[in-house]
Length: 317
Image (cartoon, rainbow, N blue to C red; front, side):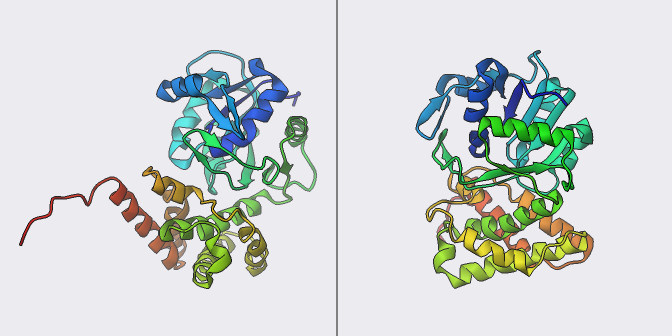
């Protein structure tokens, strides 16, 4: 694979903000574009996004627009936008294009590869905590990192080496896991435990420093994920849960995971991706997932409340 000279990003939210400024700074405005259309394109061109105090108005390309094929595409949208995003990048995928789909979950790579083939898709995920609200994000750009690679990376393939060299040139922190599937499942286990607990209870990450009960819920939810991962041949174990203790208790106290942010903003959440997937896999594999079941239905009730479905008129009796 040749050097990455043109790149695109779809999904300029919290995760996308980690990449975009540094990619544009390295490649130049003419060689880095954000993919968007309609009202979102208009808003990005008019208002831009403010990242660590700097307002950026990146070059925006519509999905229908003809132009150069991308050497690298970063997909950083939420789960409910994945199907549309897979269609929207079609004009950018060429013979040598590599795709990193850094969104949450354990199944996105398979969905992207079903459309474009595994020759174009590397495994990837993010480990960081970024809050974006109303187009504004403030975070330490070196606190987190992107993990990427082939399924196994004991020896690095040419395409992994190419992406590695590009991230280094952009000053984007990264890590190449020996076993990327295990890494994806580990992050997913943390998300189900932390993201879902915070969303259901309405608490920030800081609650895990103070509440034994919150931690009991978090850990038991992680064990549900561990049981399913083990059944599917992924080696997660109790030491992984123990190793996460320092990380979760070191997160910025008032930071909130994405699902709680969405609930507070009265947006649709990724509960299907997290708890919904767990409930589905539990049924398929015959593994009980009672906490995920409660997360799923409890958060769905909050979505229904936000949508005004309980706002019927009161009647005197």
